[in-house]
Amino acid sequence: MMSNFFVMATWAEPFGGYGSFDDTHFPQDWTIFYWAWWLVFAPSMGLFVARISRGRTIKQMVAGSLFFGSSGCFLFFIILGNYGLSLQLSGNLISSVS
Image (cartoon, rainbow, N blue to C red; front, side):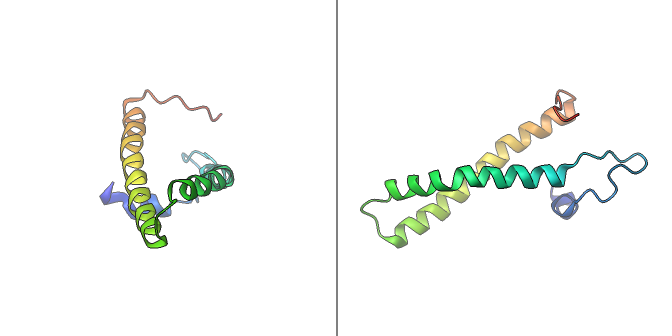
């Protein structure tokens, strides 16, 4: 991953549908998925953080949210990212995109 970080981080599928390059519609689908996910997730997360932060200072709440939120995302991407990569490399990944 580290050797291909910039390629993977900036990939926008510029040649999709040309020659041997598949047109996966990944950039468009990811944008729609991410927008919808935040639309649903943001209000409930705000209420959750407000509820568990009762009795704490704003400094404690911000520091805790940044630390534990970043740690949770880090673990989430490590575990599920490696699992997805394992499925892809082993050929067990079944694509629902047709």
